[in-house]
Length: 156
Image 1: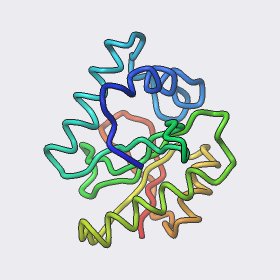
Image 2: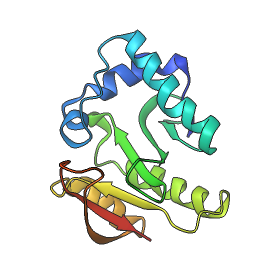
Image 3: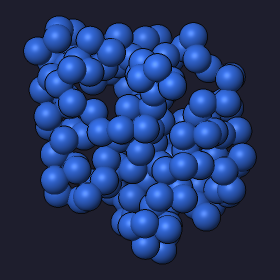
């Protein structure tokens, strides 16, 4: 796992336009390499500077990025949440569990965060499985903002 940088623009462009990403996370409107660089700058890089954490590139041993995983500070949540997304060809291989567990350990052991949460669509059974495997448990349904879809909130 490492911080995202502008060299990851091509990877981010592919990831954010995968069907699973758009379905379960949302369409971020990233359609060009310039959009991807803006996403990296205004999302993860800004979060590293403001919060001391953010989304990180999850990479294979040869340094190939295959997903993102990290902590996000969102409007509508009091606590940072674990977020992750992987290229579909790497689903169901254990990478999300390994990455999310590492992020959770980092949040608790290094950053000293007392509470970390996660949110997911109620029908995203794969993500729910990952969250349960890393020790998070369902708490309740929430809405981040009025009139937004209901999401499942998980916490330690």
